[in-house]
Length: 412
Ligand code: AMP
Ligand code: MG
Image (cartoon, rainbow, N blue to C red; front, side, top):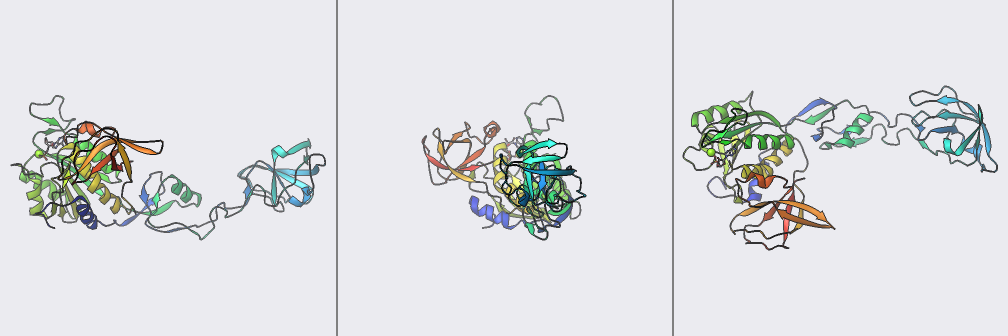
């Protein structure tokens, strides 16, 4: 394919993803951070629960002692003592006796069932009447009933979310190997672009830099680390210095993402500098918004030259950068779900390039309804606000009427 012709979206995606590999693993302490990916298989170091315990507040008994018990003919048992959660029973239950224990407390030796407090009646200080029979094992949680020692619990490649983190903790796993998170340098470009924190009033002819915020938020959302966030003017040498610094073998980043300056403007420096320092491997994708996209490599850093238009930058990030960041983190899947949605209003579409239309998509009575977020100009960043999906209009189609069924990529 190379850099001369225009790439189709799928082709470009496949190529770009083939250039990214999972990063090496690192050992981390268990934390509440969601979304890290296990780089090792976890075998249970202990049984969970670690000891047989009670599932209820009640009395540990011997089931055969209450054989035949009913409310008219209750069985009377002598209560030997009490065990709270966190304590260890010191005496066994023998026939004719019971020990009062709380939920989560270890079962005393000899006992094989629990009777709920609600099913007993306290006769005096140390006897209870039980008016119901019990099955052996009733309300008892067996040692290893959740996870048994040595069992493979979480596979390599498992994404760690709330349940997985809890399971690790339940086994006492406090350190684990996960894939390293990719470091990213976000670089915005353009002589007209000004950081909102650099001055109070916008000078004539200038605009505020929005890409720095959208892109760094997207990097973090995708699980990357925003290593650096800078702006450079449309200047060849400054662009070169920045790229060199971020592609440095030792101190560089895994991924460089730029926005703007990648088109054919007189001062657009991104592409020529990329070609001088590294390799431009892909250039221009047949999509709207986002045609001027450059992908390549400088040293060990993957390089994405995204278009400067704020919507184009976000959409191309979603389609090309996010999956790469996810793959680098060892994620097994980076595809967004695609559903068939019904357009709530008509959408204009010129045949030629595939178009991604921002929409609010909701599920109503089992049907996905998609409402486009107004004018779809690629500079109209407010069309991304509230959008939870991208409608995919194939290249070879034209305008869509309200009610048309359409592929819809859900961004949540
Ligand atoms: P470019 O790709 O550099 O030609 O930029 C395309 C359009 O996006 C121009 O109108 C730029 O002013 C605008 N643009 C570029 N970078 C940014 C940015 N960081 N924030 C907001 N708009 C931008
Ligand atoms: Mg520019």
